[in-house]
Length: 305
Image 1: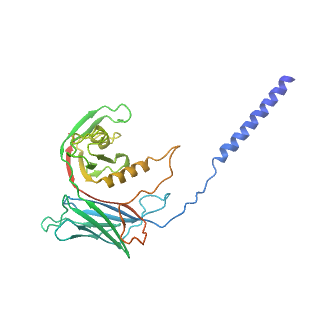
Image 2 (image 1 turned 45 degrees about the horizontal axis):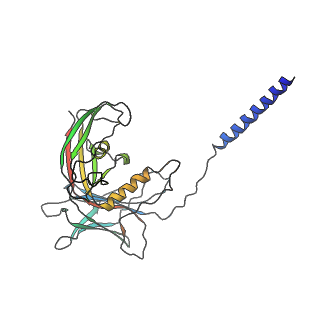
Image 3 (image 1 turned 135 degrees about the vertical axis):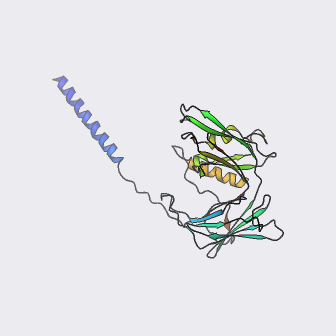
């Protein structure tokens, strides 16, 4: 009899535990509505311009909500966009004409001298309705690529998961501290624009011990120029470009990287990233995001045998 009572009590206890568990787990399925305050959209300026002869593009959009899908940013089509060469004997104006999807473009012309020059200081001017936005950037020199080496690797786990050929960049930092670089990787002329492959370097990549003017450190010249989930195949073309940037743009890129990695248990609240574009009228606080940078470019390519 006593055994039956104990068994009954145990059964009741198990039922209570099950009911509590169902209640708790069921409550986890409740949809939580988050009210997000939609502030005035920012004007977002994507203005990375270089000294190559290719068509140069500046894109203007308006920001969207934090939980909105990317790629749906409203384009700004009614702006006036130009860059002024402040170093020339007489200020030289480069006018960017609107094409589509918020893009304003300029085609350099070496015959007429309409090109961007290393060592010159440039000003970006953007007029949107009655708002005038400005930014400034010097076109710093870049370095020289010595060669691109192909490396045969057997994928045996993270970070290299795929067996095949990968590329190693051989290039030295410019002599003298204070150089900053953005290294871009192109596979068959398609830019590897994943934020995980955003590859920037201050000098040769390790300034803590004063090293300068030597081969870029291994993470810069190898790890960040490859996608280790996809080895290169025979016939594919790989192109690497080294763009000169400045200290402010280097800091801006670092904030972009850090904000993208911000997550987990100890994540900090999402924060707005500063912009080096600002309103010409200090009394009119126009919300602005994005970045302006003038760059010199060197490049090298290799076809996978």
